[in-house]
Each structure stands twice: as structure tokens, then as C-alpha cells.
Amino acid sequence: MTFVVGREQQQVFAHRCVLACRCQAFRGMLTSNEDPLSSVPPQGPFILGNVQPEVFLAVIEFLYTNSVTLNSHTVS
Image (cartoon, rainbow, N blue to C red; front, top):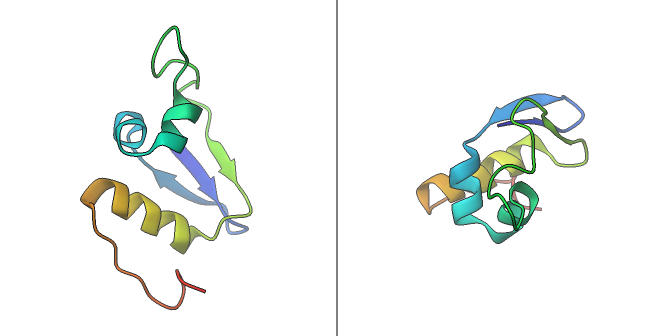
């Protein structure tokens, strides 16, 4: 799935199944009670205009690897 992040409109790609399995918030966004992982069309990007790309990428890194590298751009 595709996310468009920040004022820069940076595209970030991630697997729906990884996000839904690793994060309850994404699971709620990506699943429905009747048919898991079908409530969000795969072609439609999520627009996250108020999120800094560096921060979102850190979240994705953590969900994929169970670790994250933080720096002054991701922590404020």
C-alpha cells in the first residue's frame, strides 16, 4: 500500500499485512469485521499531510524490524 507523507508528499510503501499484524491502529484502519484487509482499496494512497516523512519512516522501520534508529529529526 502507498502512503503520501508530509508537505513534501513523499511516497512510502508498506505491506498491508505487516502493518495490520504489527499495529492495532493500522489493523483498525485496514480491516473490517466481515472481510479482513478488504476495507481499504489497494490502489488508493493514504494521505498523511501532517506527518513528517522521517517520523513515519521510523514507525515503518520499527514495525518491520522491531527496532528503530532515532535522531534529532525523528524525536522532538
